[in-house]
Image (cartoon, rainbow, N blue to C red; front, side, top):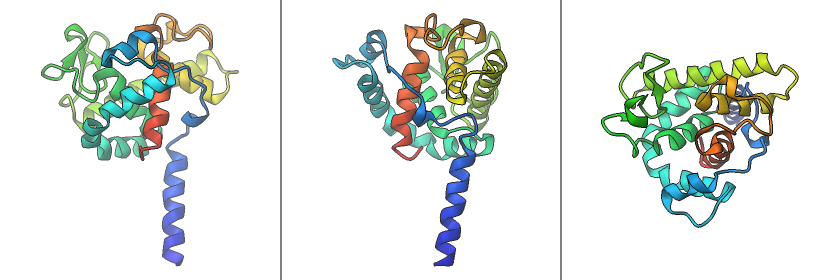
Length: 201
């Protein structure tokens, strides 16, 4: 009984540590735009579309789950957000050609842009996922400095938006996705993350 309690506490502690940038479940989101939803010819939109897009990627995502959880735990960021970015950026690898996307500029599952970063590892490796997560964390930290009075969850969402379009593109909380791909990047990623969270990520 004592071992079970200790084990549960360790799991709870690890889970708590993995969310130092905020609780993704507390972030408000409008989900995917019509443009993004059309990727899978969906008739639904918004959060429901984001959930369906994530669900369509789940089987492929399972191949990377162990690595995503490991990186999230090590870097103290919610693994569900890593999974959501992988879903949004590369459809868990399905949108890539020989590991590349975005007209040959984006590399790997998390679409590290070779114009701004030197890609590390193979396209689906732990090293690649670590690099993408480092870029995300750096974006969050830059948003924290830019908007120090924002609540933690707002900064978290702003960092997700900045991962796509840069810190300079984030000017207001309400309009942070204007100028991102599909004008919905952080809202779609957050909704997908909330879905993946419920699937054990």
